Length: 300
Image 1 (cartoon, rainbow, N blue to C red):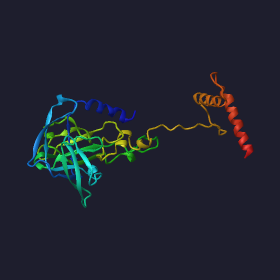
Image 2: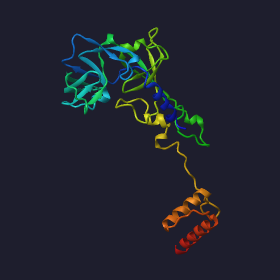
Image 3: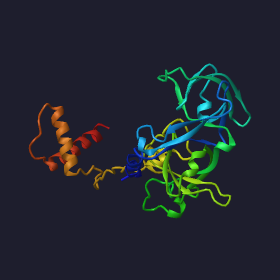
Image 4: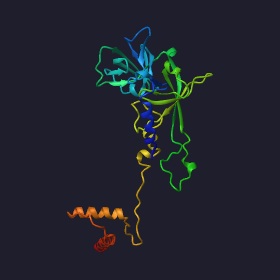
């Protein structure tokens, strides 16, 4: 069984009950300036789970300066209307590109605009240091770099020497209340486990929990390809599928199993407009195959 079947259980168990937060990758964080956003800052209460009130609430900071994902910013053009999740629609009228590949966008929000049907939905957090926390996100890859180990493979050559990938992210400050072992979701990014809390100058560390999907949860990219994580290294190209090898006898004739012979007999009978419900004469099939081969050789 491939891992994706097992990891799918993670989503089924976690999705209905874990709280939701937001995090933006630090190195690729882009600025969105909401020119008519609240100044000074404004705190609003929001549910930790849209469909489960028992999970509780959190405080969300609304500001003029926001962080958004570069994967989102790259797709936004001047004049586009995008939806800031749990806030409203912003029309972007200016976009600046920077040498590091990031962007700065400028726009205005219209909280009375409730038409969210055809807009790009993006996550965001206030770009305010005292209301964010920097943490470490960890993604774990497969320990070997091949989906199926063959008999002649040397396992030492298959070891994935880069199976743990770490990178920094900004998250809303409310994640500070999470304890070691807590599980939650960063929206549009996936499920995570708190591996360690901030202590002695060390940052909180959160490990990504696979959900079995061969596609990422959203346009927000991960360090490890979702398809390879779900199917195994090379599994995306069918590395785990068994290849059927044909057996041949000393004369080069294909040796058919009973099931294969019966299948071929049914195909032949169907082609002749007949039904083949009786027993299969394997010897007869082999003789016919040999005769066809002989005729081809004589014709050549």
